[in-house]
Length: 195
Length: 184
Image (cartoon, rainbow over all chains, first blue to last red):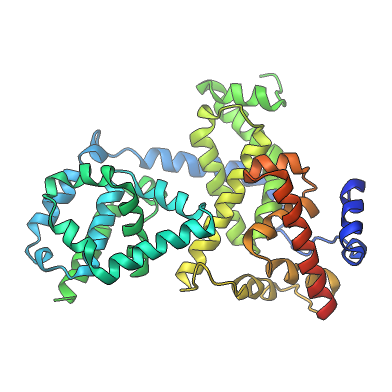
C-alpha cells in the first residue's frame, strides 16, 4: 500500500473520511524490467527518426508547390465534391506547418472554446461557405491565405475531422518520407470514387 | 564524465551536443517512473502509456534546448505528459466516433474493466472506476493530488489554473468519487 503524505491525508479526511480510509493501492501492473531499458528504447527511436529525416534539402519548403502541381495535374480534382475541398485545404495547412500547432491547441482549448470552434466548423459544412471561399482564391495564393486566416484553418481542420479523414501526424512525416505521397494517393482514389 | 544530477545542470548539459545524450538519458531515468504512472492513470493501458510516454520524451529531446527555465523541469515534464495524455484520449475517442463533448466515460471504464487483474468487488478497483467517470480536468487534478501528492502551487503551474480553482476542482472530484463508492 502506498503511504500518503500527512497534509494530503488531512485534506482528504476533511472532504471525505470515506475515501481517506480507502487503501491507496496501485492496481496497475507494469511489465518486468520495463523501466530498465526505456531510455535506450527512446534514444533508439530518436536516432531512427533523425536519420529518416534526411529528405532532400528544401523538400519541405517546396512542398506547397509540389502539392499544387500535383493537384493541377489531376484533372478529376476539379470535380472534387465539397467534402474533399476541406481535405485539400487541410493538406495545404499541413504543408505550411499549421496543422500540428492548431490541432494541438484545439485539444488544449477550454471546452467552451472548442464548442465555438466546432459550431464554426459545422456552420461551414452546413452553408458550404468554405467551398466558395476556397474556389475564389487562386491556388498560388493558398499559402498566404492560410496564414492570414488562422481561425478558418482551425475550423476547416475540425470540419475535415468530421469527415473521418485522419491526417498523418507530424511525427509520421518525420519517420516516413513517403507519408504525404501515400496520403495524396489515397486522396486521389477517394476523389475518383466520388464521381 | 562527472555524474550530474541537478536538473539545471542536466538542462545546461542538454544544450551541449557532446553531452546532450548523456544528460537526456539522466532526465529520462530520473522522471520516467513518475511520468509513467501519471500517464498510466490517465490512459489506463500499458501499451498506450508506453506510446504516450515515448512520444512525450521525443518531444522533450526536440525542445529541451529551448526550454525556458521559467518553470522547473519537473513542472514542464508533467505539463507535457498531461497534455499528451489528454490529446491521446481525444484522438482515441475520435477514432471510436465518440463525441468530444460526450460525458459518457465508457471508453475509459471499458479499458479498466478489460484489465486482466480487474476485480469489481475490490474497493481499489471501484475507486479507479469512480475516477475514470470524472471529467478530464477533475480526473487530472484528482490524480495529481491523490497519487502524485502534488502541492497546489506546483499543480497550478502544470495545469495553468489558479490554486483556488484547483482546490475547488479537487473538492468536487473527491465528492463525486465518494458518491460513486457509496452507491456501488
